[in-house]
Image (cartoon, rainbow, N blue to C red; front, side, top):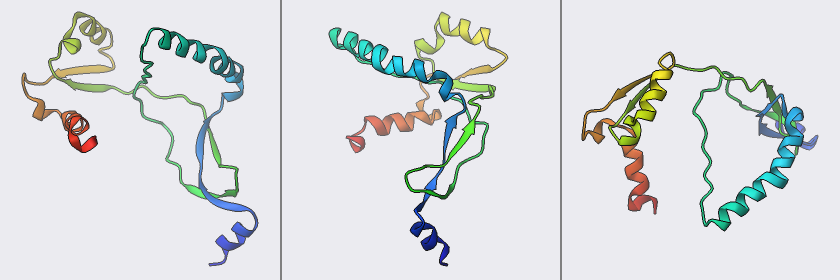
Length: 145
């Protein structure tokens, strides 16, 4: 088929599109200030205290389809605008009996969110029932070193 060669000769390349927020222009000044002022100050404070800076994020599932590859001008990755809105899912959490899972603060949190979160406790001393333990074991073994 000659189409790919023709498109390539016309300055196109086969690329995967990426999602971009439909609200980027609204937050660009705030993002710039964060990058130029807030982030360097956070790093300075962490270094002064000999501390780590850790990032966390919630887990949610996108409400839009998956992206695939298509032809686009070289250097111009295709973009699919999204609203950035997510739907809250109900969660069944299965956790071990570690104190930080069963603390009063966590119990209060779970009680306040019973419409979205249902928590189950694993049996005591039953790490084999928790699939995440496999990943943890691999991360801490010599295989990952």
